[in-house]
Amino acid sequence: MKLFDVYPLFQVEPVKAQGAYLYDKEGTEYLDFYGGHAVMSVGHSHPYYVEKITNQLNNIGFYSNSVINNLQVEFAEKLGKISGYDNYSLFFCNSGAEAVENAVKIARHYTKRPAIVVFEHSYHGRTNLTMALTAKNMPYKEGFGPFAPEVYRVPMPYSFHWVGDQATISQDAIEMVTHKIEKEIGAHNVAAILIEPIQGEGGFIVPPKGFLPALAKYSKDNGIVFIADEVQTGFARTGHMFAVEEEGVVPDMVVTAKGIAGGLPLAAVTGRAEVMDSVHASGLGGTYGGNPIACAAALGAMETMEEENLVARARHIGEILGSSLRELAKKYPVIGEVRGRGAMQAIELVEPGTKNPNTAAMSAVVKYCQSQGVLVLTAGTYSNVVRFLPPLVITDELLKDALSVLDDAFASL
Ligand code: PMP
Image (cartoon, rainbow, N blue to C red):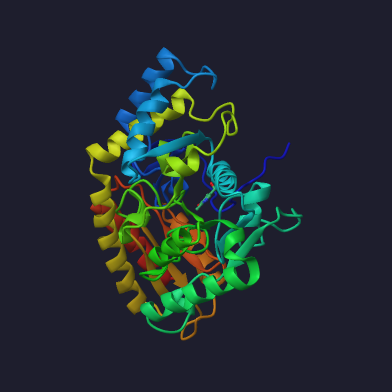
C-alpha cells in the first residue's frame, strides 16, 4: 500500500494537538509554527470550536444540499458582511481549488468572455483548471498536462527581484500587465483577473502599494471581474479579516478556504450579487459543500476570531515576528529579505552578497528547527523561502522561543 505524501517535509506524526502545540505518540511536543498550513488560525482543538462541532453532530451531522441548512445561512450572513459587500451572494464548496474553479465559472458566465488573467508565482490549486492557473511547474504541473485553455499569465511585481522604489515597481507592473492584456488577449475577451493579495506558495510576495487598487480599477473600467484568492491570506491572518482591506479594495469576488473552518473542509466564493446571481439555478453545486458540520466549524472559528480579537492579535504577532526577523537579517547575510504582513511572514534565503536562491540553507533551517521541536514551512518559486504562519492564539513567549530556535538554526549553518 502506498499513500501519497502531499508535502513531504516533516518526520513528525502528531496524534494530539492543543493551541499552538502538536504531540506525537511518545508525547514529544512540537510548536506548530506554520499553523497546519495556514489553516489553524484559532489554534488546535479550541474548546469553543470543539463544542460547536460536537453539539452540531449531536443534532444533525449531514442531510443533503436539496435544502439550504440554517447554519449555511447564519455563516453566510457573517461572511458576506465582513467581506465588505452590501448586496452579496455566496457559494459554498469544500476546498480552495474548488472555490477558485467556481469563481472562474461565475466570472465567465457573467461576462460571457473566455480569458482568465493570472500572475507569475501564483498558486491556485491542483485540479486541471487550477493547475493551469498556478505558475510553478515542478512539482505542481509536471507531466499532468494538457492544461485548461484561455489562461494568460502576466508579470507579478516581485520587489526583491525588481529594480526601483515601490511606486516605480507598481507603475511598471501595471503598464506591463495592461499592455499584455490589450495587445495579446484583448481586454474585451477577459472574464476575470485573479490574484492572491499576498502570494502564498509563491513565497509571500507582497505587491507594492497601489498595484491592487490599480488592477481593481482597470478591471472595473473594462468590465472584467476582479477576483481575490484569499485562501491563504484570509480570516485575520494578515492583521485584517481579508488582505485586500489593507488598501481598501473590494473585489467582485473573494475566494476563501483554509482558516475559514479551522480544519474542516469548507470553502466559499463570496461576491457581488449582480455577478454571482447571473448563474442559473443548480448551475453550481456539490454533495458536501456547506454541510452542517463544516458550517458549525466555520461559525466556531469565526466567533472565536471575533471574541479573541484575532485580527489585532495577528498585527501584534506581525510586529514581533517582523522586527525579530529583521534583526536576524542584520546578523545573517544569508537572509536576503524579510517580508509579509501580520502573522504571515517569510524570509528569502540567498547566497550572501547576491540575490541568487539558497535552497540548501532553506532545507537546513527547516531541518534544524524540526530537530528542536519547531515546525516551519518552505515556499517560493525558487525554493528558497521559509515561511511562518503561527496560530493566532500563540503567546508572545512561545513566539520568542521559536525565534530563538531560528536564530540558533542560522548560527548552525
Ligand atoms: N489558493 C491559494 C492561495 C492557496 O494557498 C491554496 C492552498 N495552498 C489553494 C488556492 C488551494 O486550496 P486547497 O488546497 O484547499 O485546494
